[in-house]
Length: 169
Image (cartoon, rainbow, N blue to C red):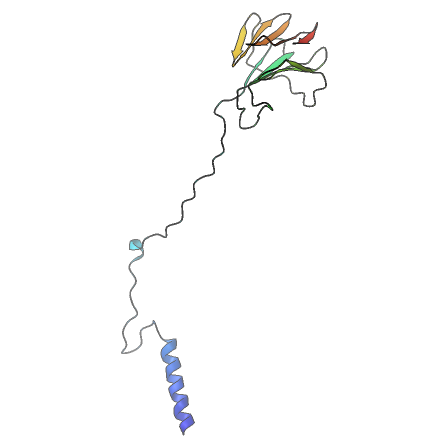
């Protein structure tokens, strides 16, 4: 008999626990939650966006009317996609004929001529530097002539690209 009474008490206790949180006949209703439109949205932590220090300036390009010479000027600090080895500014001009070569004026030092260019990419479609016109950017200026292109840095270092000759100092 003791076992039967103990079994009934255990069964009743389990039934009460199983029905907790739901209305039972004669019992109190479950607690009411506020309507969904009054619930505060969960706050998600705000993460500051990752910012890369990208230079504001962009490269400038120009090409000779013949399409044989094209130049790219990179400002000091470089761009988001290209940074000169010395930090810039940099002026690099490619000539296609009679043989592909690249003349470069960096921030300082003499101009260089590379006759074994590993990434020939000359020349863009424009803008065109008409014959007799001068382009200027940073410490550089270039003059377009029918005989070729001459570019110089403010300190006097320069290069000349033409079908007749290629020189740098």
